[in-house]
Amino acid sequence: MKKKFYGLIAVCIAVFAIYYAYDSHIIGGPSENGSPYKFYYGELDKTEKRAYDCVLDDIYDMPQKIRVPYLTGDQLDNVFMALLYDNPDLFFLGRKCSVTSGFLTDYFSVDYIMDKQEYRREARELENIKKKVIDSLSDPSDEWQTELEIHDYIIDHCDYKIKEKDYSYSSSYGALVNKKAACEGYSKAAKLLLDEVGIENGIVCGKATSQKNETSSHMWNAVKINGKFYHVDCTWDDPVNDNGMKMRMYSYFNVSDEMIDVSHTDFSYDFNCFSDEENYYIKKGLYFTSFGTAEKKILKEKTAECVKNGEKYVQIRFASRKLYKSAVSNLIKNGEIYNILTDVKKSTGKKISTDMMRYYENEMQNILTIIVE
Figure 1: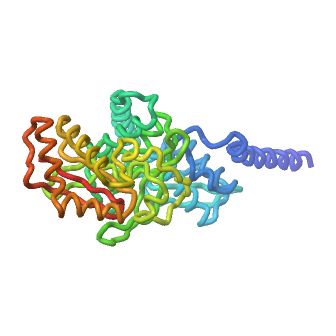
Figure 2: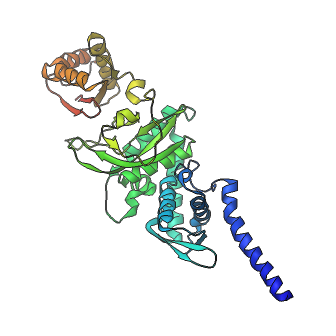
Figure 3: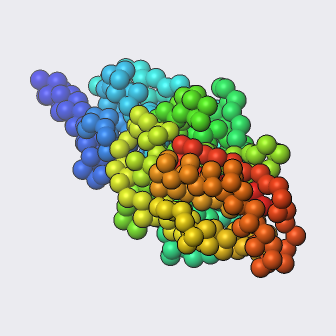
């Protein structure tokens, strides 16, 4: 009897130890590994959170399996999606995972797209890039300026490229080290760098519709600046013009839900981006609620400033589609822009064309880009 009794105690202790190991994740909060800003973790149920933490605590050692609580197929999908969206440093994971049953628990397994040696090498390369970017920041205490410089670094150093079944293009490593990435890579690179400087942010998945009315799955970021969340889409701010010149745009830099709804929908997470205070054009004085003599003077001053700085284009945003169309008609069709360029040439003494020009319209965001050559 004693042997059976002691055996029962041992089993009970083992079961309690397993349960306590899982439950401690909930009591102590999310794992300290990965991103400090885990929004998708917060959407999980109690069991899913335990599994998420178990995986994140062990995954960087790349084990063949990780003990997790029992998960249904839907719960497994929720956990894996949350891990990938929350943690941009998990660039060594494929997209296939599974759970196998064991005694009193399940075991999580995932495909790795590289071995440990390759992972450690790439992790060091990524760390070096992060340090380079952070060291280059002009004023880390200024959230808006820091966000802007991270946005610009990604746009300047990464080219858009997508290749199915090659997950490097969907990773922070692909965007920052290989310098080629799809939208997922752009957004994870932004999250990785924003995490590093302590700016609260998360990834948003949804649908995006282009000016050609083509809709596809898309990924971008939400960033908290001075207490409020805004949408930021580095991918769509990184176009190449007709001459092959890479342009740095700000059409989707700190836009509200209302501003982005015309092109981006079906958000995977609602960050409640209600403000436009930190929008690029508003902060830079390039946002017009009317377009008369005063606004044309501002446009002339901003264009002259761009020319003096050696920049090739100036961008302005209008408060409504009606105002945008009216201003474009006045500037382009009626030729008012040539008068402005003539005055800019005189005031700056720079050689710029005053009788021909190129421009780009973004009707969805009411933005006009004027190329100054």
